[in-house]
Image (cartoon, rainbow, N blue to C red; front, side, top):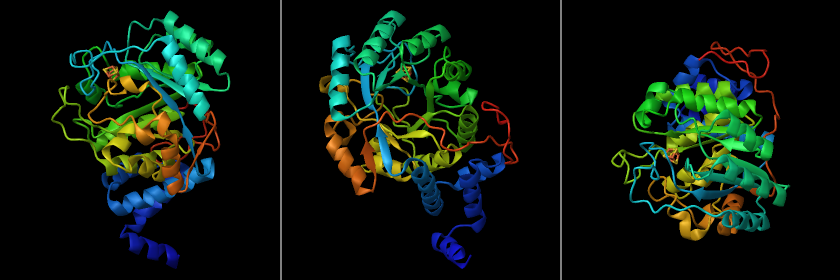
Length: 386
Ligand code: SF4
């Protein structure tokens, strides 16, 4: 007890807040009001340090000091959408557009496999050129050539029938950021044809089809409030994603948000820690945006509770053209060829990159809670009231 009080003093933190964070760690949930209170102060240095310490304890208990790597292949930068924050939105005429051929994509996988990647992430804009027929051919080729690897798709909103066909063809996982759980905020960030309801319906479809499903959001996107972030955390707790990626908002000079300030590095780290505590088994990325906003962003993300990195395997000549925000990293430790640099950086903080598919494992019960913080005993998929 004496030791605990000393620690609170040292951290200059309200003991009640420490106890709240301890409960969040032990129960993987917190009453909504307490989560709101925590969000209000989570980026203060002492609170952030305590959150990170608790998040690392959970991370190490479940995953050891290992980090999974995913090979990212950005195979098309054409997109039919016009999200206000995105550098490759369709109305940006200054982008030099490209599509990789099937052979180029397979070459990326082959090179990645030789380096030890056992997950490939096929990511692209919503490009109508990639019909279901074309994508299915690609999925089958990748799964046939590398049966020991997981395949993650990140190609946006599709009808249920398309998601089902990709899954039958062998796709294992799907990344689709929910962007913001708040419908009004979602509408502010997107053109009128895109809605939070549709995005969340797609995510529910993916879950229903048995994909390991990933969602996520930007921290500090224009108009975002802490109340929006609370909605994001509650949404994720309800949805129970297997994967997640959150990164700071970074502006792109050819978008309507070119003059908006970047999101906070510190708040992003605090939210990574909170997510690790809320969803202990989550495969949680230290994102490229985190590495872009701070020279040690990736490492700090791992120390805050993340356990996944996603180096770029795309051919070098096209990497600069997949520019979602200004200065996006795509070389050195952020790339397939910089893997030894990345491994060295992670070793420097006591973590090890592993050669493994790194599938989601239900290591520990993640019971849902009601708003009073009492665990619900219901079946998987039962929803916590928002
Ligand atoms: S965020 Fe995705 S869907 Fe929106 S414009 Fe960019 S690539 Fe297209």
